[in-house]
Image (cartoon, rainbow over all chains, first blue to last red):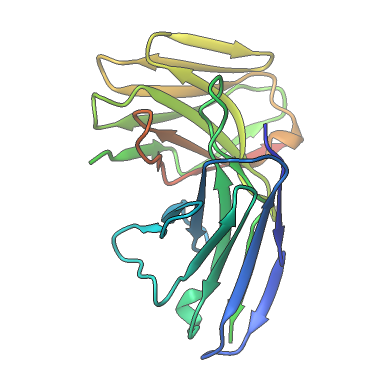
Length: 115
Length: 111
């Protein structure tokens, strides 16, 4: 399965600022996914990012707040814009499995605290 | 859309005992059911999965069973060890659709 490197692993940010999270995969993948995991909660899909097209956002998430870039088949970024304390969460990137293993592989996550 | 429920939310077992976590799903079209283990400070890791054409799958101390008629599937961990302590998530999807995750079960294995 793919190996995902996600940076930064954690950050503490001031409200009103923005943070960009990077996700690097060791192989080319068609689809990359960004999830949010609020404290003690399950995983919620933010958006799906395909190379060469705009990301597809889930209900409750908008591009102005969570702009996503997908410049090539191994890299993506998620920006959390104009942060508030409610944005404090773990943000995870994920890629789909190969044809034999549908399960997603997740990065180690970015633990964001907004103060 | 799909809805996945998971029980119990917390589970404590003595080392060496078995642990069982159960999930139910709502969409009969779902045909793939993975289980993830998330240790503190780490991302979820796929530990076992099952497809709808199989009733049971086993990998060493871990097994998953699926009852498509009742729309539920369960994770079974035998001979639990302290390193099994983590949060476990079930999920369901129909290939090509997004995964829906359960709310998670925090498993504590007491030495």
